[in-house]
Length: 267
Image (cartoon, rainbow, N blue to C red):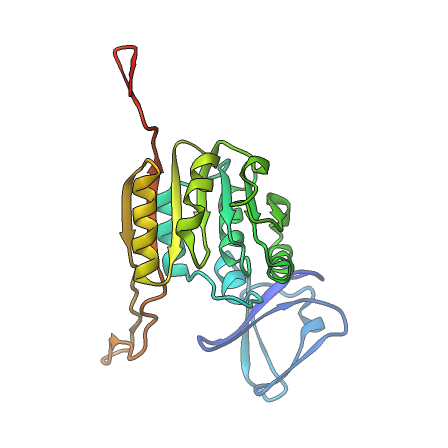
């Protein structure tokens, strides 16, 4: 696949030295590895390598959604890929899903969700910080996913009636997620899934209590850990460094405070 003006390229030297750049004419990039002539990439194929002015080899990699997220502009902590994978499978979000996000932040999770629900689904994301929303918008445009997201700078906890309903999933990423449980309940369809991002145990505890008090069931709290392995001939071993705790994930399903048996509603 050839590289054209406007495409993004992941310039890869090593795991710790890689850059995500937009290809433009008359553009050069100065690095400690030498100068890279970005305009010279036009017409080249993804997967090949070039040399910098200091004769350092750089591979031209077509970026994935993982690259866009990890290289996104940010002014808040992002959700790491190790957590994103479990969020996707546990929530059941897929093409066509309608998802409510309470707390946009830098838009890393928004970007990931949009990449899953497209082209038939949609993300409705809310945040009260306009600066966060501007950064999130830039990241979504860069990943070419902004058309699948509606962004609103509003606290839906105070304006529940203005939010669409019958969401397949509601995801809360706030410092006090338990305060958004009621709003998420009202927005979800029956058996719709709730997810809260909780960096600390006391956040997870308060959210779990609120979920039980608001007719949610199938409540699960998990922490995902991942350890890299340095695979080298005769010297393979676990890496000395790892991303340990990032957040606790709380999942739950919306149920109703009544049951129906043999055609009769039982309160």
